[in-house]
Image (tube, rainbow, N blue to C red; front, top):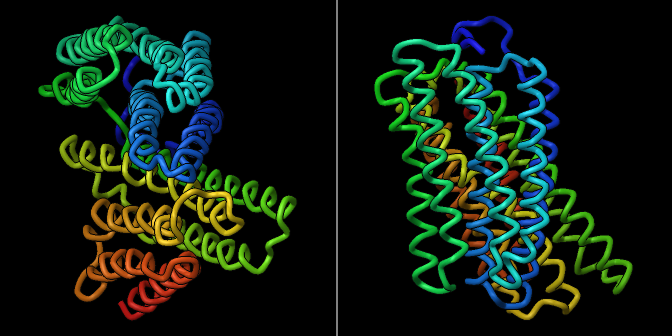
Length: 375
């Protein structure tokens, strides 16, 4: 398992990586579903905390595999089997998401997470066997760091619910985030900029597709039970405009040329927690808005609309921070921040807010395209 070249031509996502993404989105769907259920019941704080926990586990395991594969993917039998073990781990995690939300039971979710992360340890140990010097040290630091943090996650299971558990969870998250920076302090892994940009883009597409799918299922269920077409069509139209606009805005400019160093790449990669998390949360918000339209949600029209507009605005701001601000100039720099503010303001419209937010996102695409055409 020798490191691949950062300058390798035609470096693209593999079928195994695509299969990996599709299996991971199962867990994303579970987290979004539970978030929608909690918010619709009026338990917003509980739902957001559970979503934060579940999505971090999904995103962090996905991200670590993605960067490792960009540097060391050898596509042989041991590599494939270890990757399939990681896929099995995320499916166990997905099965544990409902318990995490409903009962604060982290056992199954942690077991699934440990499967993914310890499989990653074996990948780094294998890379260390094939490396020498600083690259070998880096690989061993990854293996040791990941292992130590997993002991922390096991300890979480024995901490009673409440402030103490929350504190330990936050410490484990900070430790996870610190491992790559410490491991690559002197030697950088040979990740491929084009490959990384493509992998993140593909996963963003899959998450947006899951958002559309979740909203479609919720729409179909509402129509079957209530036939409230007049109330549901504006939500459907606004939701589609938001999702279509989210795709357009993300891919408006190539980003791989910005990923030159670990400092740039880490900030960009870590920032995608908000991009991917908010994209999936839009789907959960659309479910809440649909349930409110047919009288099944226990919250106000403004709160139901906020479940869509808040993550949509967060998505726009984060994509601006990670992508647009590096390539846009002049008036184009203000398009996404202004759009985010406009989408957030649509919350005050209550039931009509989702459609208004969708129109605001569509207008954002139109303005951005016009400015780009003018150069």
